[in-house]
Length: 357
Image 1 (cartoon, rainbow, N blue to C red):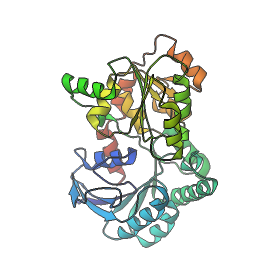
Image 2: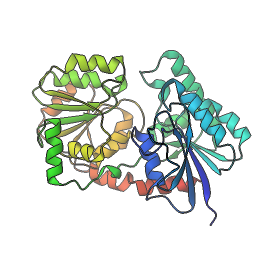
Image 3: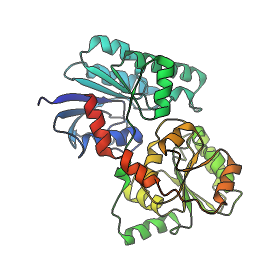
């Protein structure tokens, strides 16, 4: 069978070390990759320390712009222009360069598949002009792409209601978080973070308004439970202000983001509760990862999170409802592991993407 040549555009690149799209790419090109697919991943030479020519089952090509922030639009456009020839499919992750997809569609013979991610134009962190641009970019991409991917049924419903297109629903995988970490290593990690098994709750996310970071911190400032909160605390003025305001509270342990899989597995697995404050997006990768592990999952009460967890997590809408949950006694969410194992394995996700090519 002839190989399908696929260019992946829009992530920072691999090896993964940032967010959900990077984990998606790593798992598409890794052990789940079919020999019928020939991947090329476009990477940011500004964001990655090392320039490799290949990684896992893919070739790597580099573009000299940052993949996020103000340069993300030109980063995506440059990547798409470099991929005009020689590929059967362009897999575009996100909407930074979506405004240019009608142009790329005219210039290239490749099939264009777009994963629109969440509803970026609704995120609180963006200014009004940026939100308008992202909405226009979304509209251009959805209307011009050959195939649109939505990672959540709620996102799929929005796309159909807004644009009259039925996207393909493909979620994220989360089983890459599973690790065989020795007891000694786990104990060393817990000591490093100043916690003990079962004596802390945990939140892991980017420190952004739509993730309800301040609400979580303020709530835990009122109760005796310990909270280990891992995030990019020095990213911007918002995160730095929260760090300054709450770092003095004795029951709050605020640690900088880590992408070490053994640490993430250990810290999540040994927590009493996993908190998911995200209020935007579709299937949040961090929520899917948490579902594979042991702690009860308490998620912010929005349709995306209820859909991702099939209504089987516990939900809060503000600080008062979170305190009520935490004081209610039985927080078990036992069926989440089974849901994750059935729906969110990378083998299934990779096969679904390859079926599109």
